[in-house]
Length: 225
Image 1: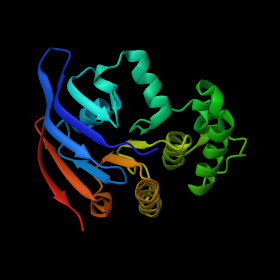
Image 2: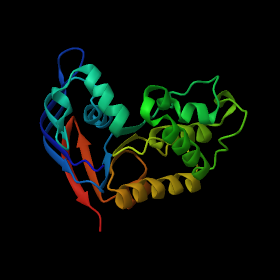
Image 3: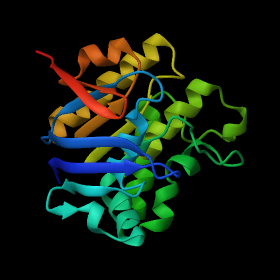
Image 4: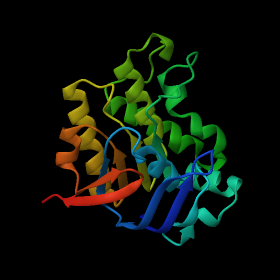
Protein backbone atom coordinates (compact mmCIF):
# COMPACT_ATOMS: atom_id res chain seq x y z
CA UNK A 1 0.00 0.00 0.00
CA UNK A 2 1.18 3.54 -0.81
CA UNK A 3 0.36 6.47 1.45
CA UNK A 4 0.62 10.18 0.64
CA UNK A 5 1.53 12.56 3.45
CA UNK A 6 -0.26 15.84 4.11
CA UNK A 7 0.60 18.08 7.08
CA UNK A 8 -1.16 21.33 7.94
CA UNK A 9 -1.10 23.65 10.94
CA UNK A 10 1.32 21.40 12.80
CA UNK A 11 2.54 22.54 16.19
CA UNK A 12 4.65 20.72 18.78
CA UNK A 13 5.28 22.03 22.28
CA UNK A 14 8.10 21.12 24.65
CA UNK A 15 7.68 20.05 28.26
CA UNK A 16 7.81 23.69 29.34
CA UNK A 17 4.90 24.61 27.04
CA UNK A 18 7.11 26.45 24.57
CA UNK A 19 6.44 25.80 20.87
CA UNK A 20 9.43 23.97 19.44
CA UNK A 21 8.13 23.16 15.95
CA UNK A 22 5.67 24.88 13.62
CA UNK A 23 4.83 23.59 10.13
CA UNK A 24 2.18 25.46 8.17
CA UNK A 25 2.06 22.95 5.32
CA UNK A 26 4.06 19.99 4.07
CA UNK A 27 3.24 17.26 1.56
CA UNK A 28 5.02 14.21 0.19
CA UNK A 29 3.75 11.88 -2.51
CA UNK A 30 4.25 8.10 -2.38
CA UNK A 31 7.50 7.04 -4.01
CA UNK A 32 9.22 10.25 -2.91
CA UNK A 33 12.52 10.39 -0.99
CA UNK A 34 12.80 13.49 1.21
CA UNK A 35 15.83 14.54 3.26
CA UNK A 36 15.44 16.81 6.29
CA UNK A 37 18.55 18.81 7.15
CA UNK A 38 19.47 21.63 9.51
CA UNK A 39 21.62 22.46 12.53
CA UNK A 40 21.47 20.45 15.74
CA UNK A 41 18.50 21.41 17.87
CA UNK A 42 16.58 22.91 14.94
CA UNK A 43 13.62 20.52 15.28
CA UNK A 44 14.46 17.90 12.64
CA UNK A 45 13.95 14.83 14.82
CA UNK A 46 10.88 16.41 16.43
CA UNK A 47 9.37 16.76 12.95
CA UNK A 48 10.12 13.10 12.20
CA UNK A 49 8.57 11.96 15.48
CA UNK A 50 5.50 14.09 14.81
CA UNK A 51 5.08 12.37 11.44
CA UNK A 52 5.25 9.01 13.23
CA UNK A 53 2.73 10.00 15.89
CA UNK A 54 5.32 9.65 18.64
CA UNK A 55 4.79 13.11 20.16
CA UNK A 56 1.59 15.07 20.96
CA UNK A 57 0.79 17.64 18.28
CA UNK A 58 -1.79 20.18 17.25
CA UNK A 59 -2.92 20.39 13.64
CA UNK A 60 -3.19 17.61 11.08
CA UNK A 61 -0.77 14.83 10.13
CA UNK A 62 -2.55 12.75 7.51
CA UNK A 63 -1.19 9.58 5.94
CA UNK A 64 -3.54 8.60 3.15
CA UNK A 65 -7.02 8.77 4.65
CA UNK A 66 -5.80 8.52 8.26
CA UNK A 67 -5.24 11.64 10.37
CA UNK A 68 -2.91 10.15 12.98
CA UNK A 69 -2.96 13.38 15.00
CA UNK A 70 -6.65 12.67 15.75
CA UNK A 71 -6.00 9.11 16.96
CA UNK A 72 -5.51 7.96 20.53
CA UNK A 73 -2.17 6.57 21.68
CA UNK A 74 -3.11 2.90 21.14
CA UNK A 75 -4.44 3.58 17.64
CA UNK A 76 -1.29 5.50 16.71
CA UNK A 77 0.82 2.59 17.94
CA UNK A 78 -1.23 0.17 15.86
CA UNK A 79 -0.80 2.40 12.80
CA UNK A 80 2.98 2.43 13.29
CA UNK A 81 3.11 -1.36 13.62
CA UNK A 82 1.25 -1.85 10.35
CA UNK A 83 2.46 1.03 8.20
CA UNK A 84 5.69 2.64 9.52
CA UNK A 85 9.31 1.51 9.51
CA UNK A 86 11.29 3.62 12.00
CA UNK A 87 15.08 3.81 11.92
CA UNK A 88 16.18 5.52 15.13
CA UNK A 89 19.50 7.25 15.75
CA UNK A 90 19.83 5.14 18.91
CA UNK A 91 19.61 1.54 17.76
CA UNK A 92 17.26 0.36 20.59
CA UNK A 93 18.32 -3.28 20.26
CA UNK A 94 18.04 -6.07 22.84
CA UNK A 95 21.66 -6.88 23.70
CA UNK A 96 20.98 -10.49 24.67
CA UNK A 97 19.31 -11.35 21.34
CA UNK A 98 20.86 -12.12 17.98
CA UNK A 99 20.45 -10.24 14.72
CA UNK A 100 17.40 -12.12 13.41
CA UNK A 101 15.55 -12.03 16.75
CA UNK A 102 16.07 -8.27 16.96
CA UNK A 103 15.19 -7.62 13.32
CA UNK A 104 11.99 -9.69 13.51
CA UNK A 105 10.85 -8.38 16.89
CA UNK A 106 7.62 -6.87 15.53
CA UNK A 107 6.46 -10.37 14.56
CA UNK A 108 5.55 -10.90 18.21
CA UNK A 109 2.92 -8.17 17.90
CA UNK A 110 1.59 -9.00 14.42
CA UNK A 111 -0.11 -12.36 14.79
CA UNK A 112 -1.31 -12.59 11.19
CA UNK A 113 2.04 -11.61 9.66
CA UNK A 114 4.61 -13.41 11.80
CA UNK A 115 6.00 -15.62 9.06
CA UNK A 116 6.30 -12.80 6.51
CA UNK A 117 8.00 -10.48 9.02
CA UNK A 118 10.56 -13.12 10.05
CA UNK A 119 11.22 -13.88 6.38
CA UNK A 120 11.49 -10.18 5.56
CA UNK A 121 13.89 -9.62 8.46
CA UNK A 122 16.14 -12.45 7.27
CA UNK A 123 16.13 -11.17 3.70
CA UNK A 124 16.98 -7.61 4.79
CA UNK A 125 19.82 -8.79 7.04
CA UNK A 126 21.21 -10.82 4.14
CA UNK A 127 20.92 -7.81 1.84
CA UNK A 128 22.70 -5.60 4.38
CA UNK A 129 25.55 -8.07 4.91
CA UNK A 130 24.58 -9.44 8.34
CA UNK A 131 24.28 -13.22 8.70
CA UNK A 132 20.77 -13.95 10.04
CA UNK A 133 21.72 -17.41 11.32
CA UNK A 134 24.71 -16.22 13.35
CA UNK A 135 24.67 -17.31 17.00
CA UNK A 136 26.27 -14.02 18.08
CA UNK A 137 24.25 -11.62 20.19
CA UNK A 138 24.20 -7.96 19.20
CA UNK A 139 26.19 -7.17 22.37
CA UNK A 140 29.25 -8.25 20.34
CA UNK A 141 28.35 -6.23 17.23
CA UNK A 142 30.10 -3.12 15.99
CA UNK A 143 28.21 0.15 15.60
CA UNK A 144 27.85 -0.42 11.87
CA UNK A 145 26.49 -3.95 12.38
CA UNK A 146 24.01 -2.67 14.94
CA UNK A 147 22.80 -0.01 12.52
CA UNK A 148 22.22 -2.65 9.84
CA UNK A 149 20.16 -4.75 12.27
CA UNK A 150 18.11 -1.68 13.19
CA UNK A 151 17.48 -0.95 9.51
CA UNK A 152 16.47 -4.58 8.86
CA UNK A 153 14.03 -4.41 11.79
CA UNK A 154 12.45 -1.24 10.39
CA UNK A 155 11.98 -2.75 6.93
CA UNK A 156 11.11 -6.35 7.86
CA UNK A 157 7.37 -5.78 7.63
CA UNK A 158 7.50 -4.07 4.21
CA UNK A 159 6.12 -0.75 5.55
CA UNK A 160 4.50 1.87 3.34
CA UNK A 161 6.32 4.62 5.25
CA UNK A 162 10.05 4.73 6.08
CA UNK A 163 11.13 7.35 8.64
CA UNK A 164 14.85 7.46 9.39
CA UNK A 165 16.84 9.49 11.92
CA UNK A 166 20.51 9.70 10.81
CA UNK A 167 20.43 6.25 9.17
CA UNK A 168 24.04 6.40 7.91
CA UNK A 169 25.66 7.89 11.01
CA UNK A 170 27.35 4.67 12.20
CA UNK A 171 28.25 3.24 8.81
CA UNK A 172 31.43 3.47 6.78
CA UNK A 173 31.12 5.27 3.46
CA UNK A 174 30.65 2.17 1.33
CA UNK A 175 27.98 0.71 3.63
CA UNK A 176 26.27 4.10 3.93
CA UNK A 177 26.11 4.52 0.15
CA UNK A 178 24.69 1.01 -0.25
CA UNK A 179 22.03 1.71 2.39
CA UNK A 180 21.07 5.02 0.76
CA UNK A 181 20.67 3.27 -2.58
CA UNK A 182 18.55 0.52 -1.01
CA UNK A 183 16.24 2.96 0.80
CA UNK A 184 15.71 5.13 -2.27
CA UNK A 185 15.11 2.11 -4.48
CA UNK A 186 12.50 0.81 -2.04
CA UNK A 187 10.75 4.18 -2.11
CA UNK A 188 10.76 4.71 -5.86
CA UNK A 189 10.08 1.17 -7.03
CA UNK A 190 7.49 0.22 -4.39
CA UNK A 191 5.70 3.53 -3.83
CA UNK A 192 6.95 3.98 -0.28
CA UNK A 193 7.30 7.41 1.31
CA UNK A 194 10.87 7.89 2.60
CA UNK A 195 11.71 10.77 4.94
CA UNK A 196 15.21 10.85 6.44
CA UNK A 197 16.77 13.30 8.88
CA UNK A 198 20.47 13.43 8.07
CA UNK A 199 23.64 15.50 8.10
CA UNK A 200 25.06 13.21 5.39
CA UNK A 201 25.66 15.28 2.25
CA UNK A 202 25.92 12.11 0.16
CA UNK A 203 22.38 11.19 1.24
CA UNK A 204 21.11 14.70 0.45
CA UNK A 205 22.49 14.46 -3.07
CA UNK A 206 20.54 11.27 -3.84
CA UNK A 207 17.14 12.32 -2.49
CA UNK A 208 14.30 13.81 -4.55
CA UNK A 209 13.87 16.76 -2.18
CA UNK A 210 15.94 18.34 0.60
CA UNK A 211 14.00 20.36 3.18
CA UNK A 212 15.75 22.74 5.58
CA UNK A 213 14.59 23.08 9.19
CA UNK A 214 15.85 26.11 11.12
CA UNK A 215 14.65 27.30 14.52
CA UNK A 216 11.65 24.98 14.51
CA UNK A 217 10.32 25.97 11.08
CA UNK A 218 10.62 24.67 7.53
CA UNK A 219 12.93 27.26 6.01
CA UNK A 220 13.22 26.21 2.39
CA UNK A 221 13.45 23.31 0.00
CA UNK A 222 15.69 22.10 -2.80
CA UNK A 223 14.37 19.73 -5.47
CA UNK A 224 16.88 17.34 -6.97
CA UNK A 225 16.85 16.40 -10.64
